Length: 355
Image (cartoon, rainbow, N blue to C red):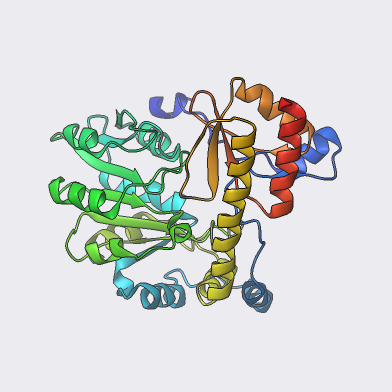
């Protein structure tokens, strides 16, 4: 039995090491997971209440069209429900979008060198050709990406803020890029970490001007619902219809839907999440500077930190009960921003290992 050739060369996506796994391996009881860019606050009280109330209905299939969740997202962003698609995390939407527009090995998908690892994975899985733009200051070089557009270009991915580097393109830069990209080439603006920017939401306004723009966002980060897997995209009604044709039935479960609605309505929790992240960033940066460690200034909820021997540091941190994330970027580990106590755990461990 032979799998598709494009699949044979793939390695499964590797998430951050689970807390339970490290506990089993080393018998540790105090573990701080700073590996997966999760919200360290846990779920909000409003979300918890909504989840508890949903449990009596989970014997039924959920609304496959996610009517109420789409309505809530539409109100928040002042868009119509027809422009919204829902996914099992924004990760699923990235794959669905690729399936809509990419179908053969001559199809080209453009993304940046140090961009989200799912972009090359989904491109290879579909048997398409990856066109990788060299990074500029660890982020996107939009001029380079534009120069790589050909008649075979079927899709462009831009992560902003970028994962795993945390770099940020300005609205002016992205808008200028969109003006130059041929209108028949879809551009995915992956904004999984947008809420941490705490800035005006200008990209939503561009949807009426650029029919090829697809914005993806998630409830897994600032909204604290990583374990329920809910993401959404905003785009033209035509593209949303295409995405809906290839998604799995009931891809967002009932509990996830009601939790996401409650999360959208809890402005206080979102504000607290942003504050904790901002305070934690300052706390960790102070440590890195004191230890004379180079890092990439970040606009998300993580920081990429440079080490001479990153895997040795990674393994040493595991023994201290701290989980961080190796990344596909030579010399770096990615550190998610946690609570004050979790950050202090990391700081103490780094001082013990490096000093």
